[in-house]
Length: 79
Image: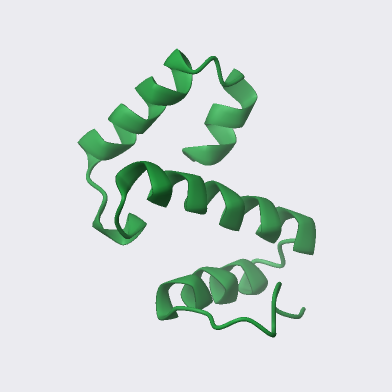
């Protein structure tokens, strides 16, 4: 499998995520969706997602619920 955006610089954390997804043989579409979802979470946090606490995840889920994000979307973002 190839990386999603090979011409753009990739942070070590993002590369680790991509490597883990490749190891698990996730499709390119699944990888794109996971990276998008992690990006949404990072935007919510306003910091790197690897610093998130359990309470951060809970607050993100509450914000998603209040924004009327469909349950299947919430579930895919917070797996």
